[in-house]
Length: 296
Length: 296
Image (cartoon, rainbow over all chains, first blue to last red; front, side, top):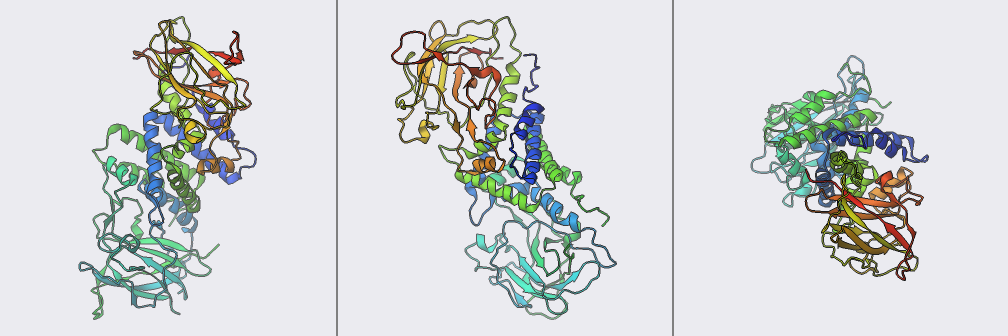
């Protein structure tokens, strides 16, 4: 029993035993992921000398995360978002693989996280139509338009789809808000022969992430604010090109550099301008081109 | 963009930003724990180049863990048990702090994990009474007895409580099994003036951890068996001494060295012997002394 106090008996040999318990039929990728995860979780526990009370608080937080989740709410995703994990994984998966798209033209548009509010059943809409069916009194309508282009060559991509969604000025997406019609502030637009898309939407506004669950409690315990900077979500696809999931951010939003889910990248900030043409429908205008990378 | 493919743009600077988002009112211990946790989770994601699909599979597993948990089932605890985390944290919290209890007498009894089946409302029972009220046909009754002693001096501790619980031979604890009476196979015994406790219980048998939830699915994916070696749970308390949570294991159980939750320590294995005295109630006997460390 020669151990020193505060030097746990269960060191690396114990951790290796847990890793080595995986049997021969474990898929190689799962073995690689779980070995690293077990190693890092054990190293974390040893590094901070995690106590049983702290561990149990974590277990109860995880249980409450699941109990709070349902078809319209994904608290597990939110929990990982507030510690930056979705943004990191998004970057690993999408950005790193496409940064090197060369040529003399513009670079591939940066990716950002999908978030929990995308819907699989969003309707297609006509170019030039509006996604705002319950425009709130404090909402500013934007005419948003641009092209989908091939990165490197700037070749226009026709028949690309631009799936767009945003929260209303009350901070709620339509599936969270009984006062918005279904599919309000979301739609899928298809580019024309010159790669153009166009629609009316709202100038986005900042909003808090849900604070009534464990992710919100954790933010409060960490003395962090809960706001996401004003943004519009985009999911852009064209045949032969890598799908792009991203968000564009109002460059003047005061939360731009302190996103509660760490999704902002400098190159994704945009400026909403006064509408150039006479337009009874919109006071603001946003021209935004999306650059896609060819599929491998 | 000069980055190399597969070299994520979001490196340590990003991770430090997430850590630094904690505000000045964060309690120091929470800041220390969360900083280490965020660092290790980000390092894990970078190390294995975690993809968004893999991350989402993990998020969904976490959500299902909570959805499966209720008053009688703690799937979050089970999930952390099968990756060895509860055993590690138990060791950090209890063992390391008491290993150095010196003297010429016997060493402090090693701790082991509490597990999810302890109950707060277990009844006190008379020394020499049985905890088996529904003895199954395949059950072997054991007369278990011993002393609670001070480690280092071997001084007997009177008025100590020995809280004991075990599964039946069908692998179920009474709260999981409608065919067992409430509080079957559990009880609290109080030591007499010489530090003795005594009771009748069952020879423990190995059983599988619950396999119908995400922890069981993970075990299956990792090609691991699901059995716990045969064991009896003990929670021993005496005034002026550190409470001890532990388990004792049948040394002949075939799962002794491959516990699905990694709780076994060599010094906690015991041998069930034929009952020495003529005893119509029991065919087996177990003499087991518990050594407690003084409170700091």
